Length: 347
Image (cartoon, rainbow, N blue to C red):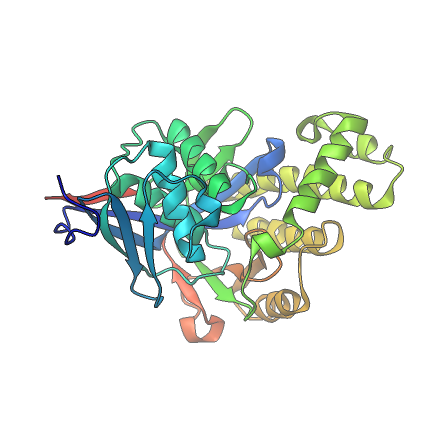
């Protein structure tokens, strides 16, 4: 049996998980709403070789090496911080044997393109998870992320990554956890542009927004089923604004999905612009840098709409534009709808 600190075994597994961009439907997944994300071609790769009783991981983009003793009592205490998601994945799948691995990514960190979920999924795959059922796998990954971060997200990121299909966006129903795959219209391009401020959920008011939704639901019932008349009955003005965003955002997702199906890019863009306005004014998750970038993008000829994507508080704006608008005019990354997370090789 390899002793503690034994030489690392050769890499035997290579796994890849894409990031995702959310076209529309933010801060509604944790109330069972509708969302419209798509997996992208950018993502995270984990290479791993099993052996020994220490889990040693390094990143090609960060200087620190994570040396984690098994079993792991609390992933949230692991250092460096980025390795906590790897530790969460190890705990959730019951990893009993250590080894060494390397993490590399093409995702911009802190962009709102789900780099944390991509890392957790890729690590779980490399450690032996199979994810034959995308829904069950998404729940496992969400639990792993909660162990790592200390708070529980909605299911959108994980299900978009595991349930993706090449060339499509996913209309996800976060209540019944169903997936409807929608192809993007010909001639439509999706771009993500960073506002220059890194997004950090742990340092944001994400948890406070979620509590507001829970409080609103105590007063008027499930927001997924509520209408604006119900929202108007909420006396507290802040709670009323939060609930109004959720109710109207779910309807905007429906409209955006119909626009995708019919090829109506103008209607899709209008829904995205209205979504940004609601996230800014009713949900208070935008920042000046995101607002200025969204306005700049919407002013470009050939751009149909743009909005902040992810939880807000920094990160990226997503824009939909005619395919012939030059990339340098928009900036950022041109995104292609990618396939699901997968095992690339097992030697």
